[in-house]
Length: 196
Image (cartoon, rainbow, N blue to C red; front, top):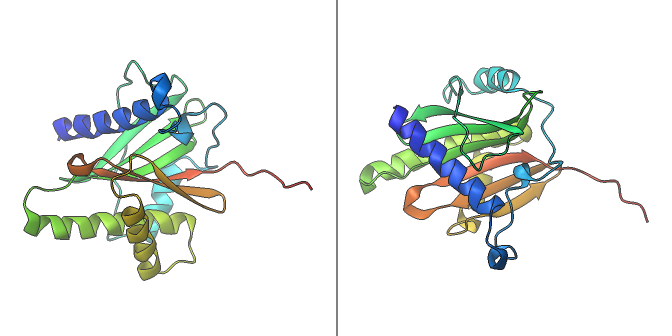
């Protein structure tokens, strides 16, 4: 279990560091992970509060306690990363603002199985978790609608290291790393008033 959590942490750190520490010629093609940018917003929500509500709303798709991930050299000193194992190939993770504990990003990462017969069922469970996460921020969606939106986002983000779609004050991000896994994230967006 510790090895898999370490693997998922490495995948998350690699995704963030690829976005945040690009060589000069790659900056135009690979944006920094939005939650890593200076002044990035947070949800007005702590992990404890989120988990309580999420688990109450999704009794068949629970998220267990998050455990802090040791910081890597390239990690932001302003963030605390944590992960929770959902099953053998599915993890939830987060980045929290140090000091306040408020959520900067919530992520579900799916690690594909090698056996194709089992992978279809495992992927369906992953999509169910991703859809449940989406419904926490779009509560008017039905289970079917949220699963359809997640599936559409995964299709649009297939093969992309960073695909995003904004819905109001929330941004959905897909990071597809092929056979290494796919991450679905929900992040807050800083809204600005339009002045003519």
